[in-house]
Structures are given as C-alpha cells and as structure tokens.
Length: 481
Image (cartoon, rainbow, N blue to C red):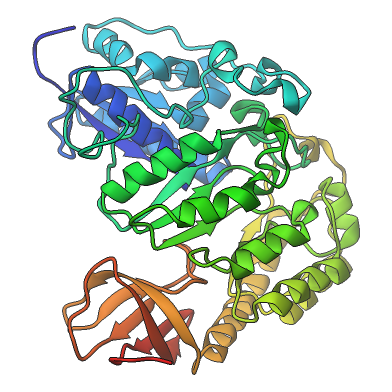
C-alpha cells in the first residue's frame, strides 16, 4: 500500500441505489488508505455515474468533464461506465472507466490511476448471463460470477477502522455513510428479470438477486447506530424480493423485523411492480407498526395497448381496482408512480386514457417522463415513433394536469393526523419533516410548527392544517389524538 496520503472526491449521480453503491466504494477506499474529501484538492475524482435515460447520461458526462477541468485524475464508475465500457473510454479520454467488477479492489484501481497507469476499460457485456436463468440457482453465486454492488455485508480489516465504517459494537459493515440525514437507503436486491421493452437496466445491472435477510437486519442495525431513523428499501423490483431465496413472501416477513430494529422509527419500501403486488404485501405495508403505508408503484402508463407494447401488465380499470384495494386497507396510504409519455404507437386515445386514470387515481406524487430511445432496447426498433415536438407537448400537458392533481391531493389531507419524521430545524422556528406518504427528495415535505422544541429524528404525530402545492403545513401540539 502506498504510504503517501491520497485524497479522493466521490461524486454520486442518479438514484438511491447508486447512493448505496457509493457508500460501499467509500468504505473500501478508506480501508485501503484513501482519504475522502469534498474539496477540489483531490488527487482523484471518482464519479458514480447514472446511465438510465439520455438526460442522466448527459449529466454524468458533464460531471466527468468538469472533474477533468479540476486537474485531478478522473475515474468513471457506475451504470454509464458499466453500460458502455470501452466505448465510453474512447469517447471520453479524460476519464478512466471501471466496471462493477473492479469495485472489490477499488483502492488498488485508484492507486494504479494515481501512479499514471491507464487501466483498460472493460468490454460491455449482458450481465444477466453471469447468473443462472433459474432464480433458485442464483443464491450464493454472485460473488463467484460477478460483483454485485451494495450486496457485501461485512469486510475483513483492522479493528481500528475510521469513524463511520462501523457502530461502536457489532459487525464492521462494508458501508461508509456519506451523509448525516436521518433517512438512508437500504438495498434489498439488485438486477431485474423483467423485460420491459423500454428499459436497458437489466442488461447492465444483471439478473435479479436478493440479499439474505440476515444481511439486511445487520445493515439496518449499523445504520441505526449511525443515527438513521428511517430506512428506505431500494432495488430494481422490490416485489420480487425472495424469489431466488425460495420464498416470494419473504419481504412480508422481513419488514416487521426491520421495523423492530432498535433505533429505527420507520421503514419505507420503494419500487413495487403492480403485476406482483400481492394482497399479503398490501396488508403488511398498510397495517404493520413501523412500516409506512406507502406504495411506490411502477404503473408507467394506463392504456392497455401501450402497456402491452411496453411488455407490461395492466390497464386503467385494473390499476384503479388495485388502488381501491390499497385504500380499503389504509385510506391514508401514500401512492406515487412514474409515467412514460409518447411511447411508440401512443395514440391520442391512449394519451387521454392516461389522463383519465390520473384524474381517477388521486395519487400523492406523479412523475412524468417523455419517451426516448435507449440503446439495446426493443422499443428503440418499434414503429410509430412520435416527433420530439409532440412528445414534449404531451409531457407538458400531462405534467400540468399532474401538478394540479397532486396539489388537490395534498389539500385533501388537511385535517388528518399524521406521523412526521423531523429532519431539520428552520430559521423561523418551525421544522422540516416528512409524513408517511412522503419519501425523501421526491414527494414533498411537511413544515411542522411547534410551541416546544422538537428533536431531529423525532417521529411526531401532528395535525395537518394547510398545504402549499404538494407540501403540507402542520401543528405539533402537546397531544394529538
């Protein structure tokens, strides 16, 4: 190991899954003698890129170019790097490109970069082929076949690891928190076995593989020891959790165990597929103490013909029935979803069907995205492509409707009593927090006014007294019924 101090600035782009991967990289780097820095005085800038859609890819490229301008050596990791490998290295000689399989020795890779070596970029490959086709044959195979970021629970190393790598007691987790918020993502699985025609993620993230429940409980306890009060369970498809471990209902059993971890006040699940959202899961999410009645459901559209072209399940009628079942169990449940507008072959009737569904569904949060071709996807070769101008028009029209509907849904919550996780104090004496239906960064927040001081990390029952757009205003009296 080189004796001189080496500093690395780690930049994370994209989703919460990438955040977990970055914290694994941070733990491995510190264990390998690298110092993490937020300043421009880094020897190496490691950019954990996003490769999901064109806008995210462009943001990643811009970040890599900006890092190169700082004079530091630049390394591209993450989804964009994994997806394009040698092609990215040729197009962007300013950066060295590494694969997920380089993560296990990330400190050594950066040592080589700092020593002036040009690390050969990998040739992209379909990572679905690295694991058996049958899910039941995948358990325990990922470490031998390929590295799966965010799945290693512990690491060997000296007992005096830097602060942040482990709680005062318990296992030394392969994770170094990069933030200090009271909410943190917990990766429960990686990859996806679905074959949605518009999505390239499975090809570079690989086949679906679950993390063992014991690893999740251990990491939850580690995060609680770091001050985390809310766990946000993330994956590419949370409703598939356990299928490779022999139990499709495993998440229903694990959720109460996670909620019971000392120090954890709330557990939230994200990335649910409507085709796999079983009645038992609805009941657990809607009725388990410590588990948020929150349904992040990937509808994507509401027209049956468009959904068939997307190689997905459902239509407006079935989705409305699913929402009705959710609200029958917990009327206050939060429901969010994302939708793709302008998919090849989408007619005006299909577009109107989607708008009608949004009006019926009363979702708390709605994301609208315009369709764009993605390399290697079936949808890229479909006929019936809409002009970019028409896609932009439809996005704007539906986004306007979505904003109106979300504002209305927030206003409907006035008068409710909700549990809000207090996250920070505001300068005016109020507090910023989130209710059960508000996930970090994507669903708005709740401003809490209180006559007495509240502690960051408190979970308080409050009365919703007003709304401003999707955000809520609440009062925290001494006692709320």
